[in-house]
Image 1 (cartoon, rainbow, N blue to C red):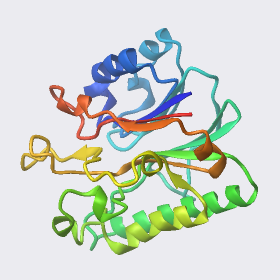
Image 2: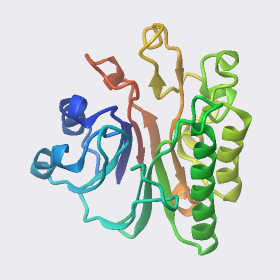
Image 3: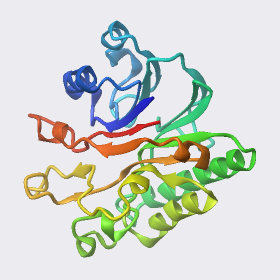
Length: 253
């Protein structure tokens, strides 16, 4: 089973990129983040013509997540934080595996309400993870975490000091997920790699100079980690014309 995750930074602007990519890579399941549009604007027929079932949690202009799957999708939840009006989460069951697609809050600027929201949202996810883990439920989490886990996941750690994605509190949240018992799929297969980015800013020549960060992840329970055949980052779409600032990450179980 090939499962991919991609923050497309507007499905309206990038739907041709997504279709081009899935026609080439043929993932069984694709997690999509940052749809930036209501469900009616999602190109459902294009995915349907390719044999994908869809689950969509969208909102006007901002956020939004979707799952495209060659297998039937049983939607379990579309919110992780009580009273949240931001479309950032989808929890589903596919082929007897619990899966969560997350577009976690960015948190910048840190002196605004956005950073406490990031922390609260993430802590709600951790609470859910802990509960599922204690019940011995197999699950995986994929998506844009908006967290740089370590200094090996950023081109210039000093430059990112103080940013919400790299603050100690944010990295501690990521470690907490590990400490519960989850495994970073990419680091299972590439434990020491440093040139392993999934995001390059549009500004400052970040892409041509390879000034990137790794913020798109898959976390797996131990039983799924044992089934992991590969985990790779596909850099090619970031070099396409009018590309998303993220590129896909792919696992195979």
